[in-house]
Length: 313
Image 1 (tube, rainbow, N blue to C red):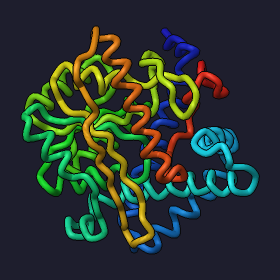
Image 2: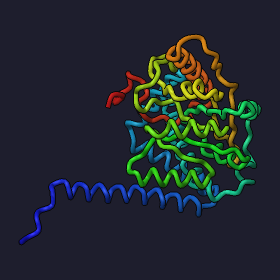
Image 3: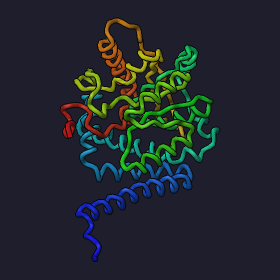
Image 4: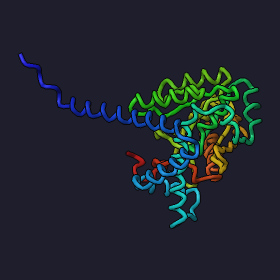
């Protein structure tokens, strides 16, 4: 008897596995190269990668230009193009830093790191219910996370589950090297986050993008969209203070400046749904404040408002 023909999907599956392996391999290779580069060479390489990414991704360039004009409607022409390129450069800088972070010493990480509002963190943790860092995709948040773990503060980070799973696991392992616990979005995220908060830990939630499109309707940079309900819901459920946080690149070598805002008010004023909506809107205002400090460091290249092309895709 002869072997049966393989199903028609087999070649496609094999191609997908090869593609997935190549994707993971490219990240591994990039991380290794970044760790081996001297710091100034890594910075120059990041700038070149940012330029290339902008050139070869016109759709993402158009999207970040839309977002930048929401932040600053006066941006036009050459000024808008420069700001968009700076966003690509900043994102490449973020990746290069993230790849290099596990190999950097605690002293190197701390040398040019400054923070404004750190007392809000210690005050929040003194209450014993943990605290929630509500962050936009801004600047060097991984560097800030490494600095926090170096100070002895455990972090639990909720991140989007990436495809392929091997790539997600690679990023999870990278963050584990930085002292963070990584929780993928999905049905298991809630219990894991509640457990971390009840152990008086810090939970980091990137919350300027509603990936599942099931969040709370808010006004964000003058236009209606949705933002995740997670921070407000968790804050009310556990009694964990919500601290809006941003971390910015500075001109200094390996320079970073973090801003920790005062906690959002969690005072109950009505039903749960209404309170979650009110707190999430207040969070949107805080995210606007943080992003406006350095809009060119905002790494949001995806559609985020219903009027954006591809929003419903």
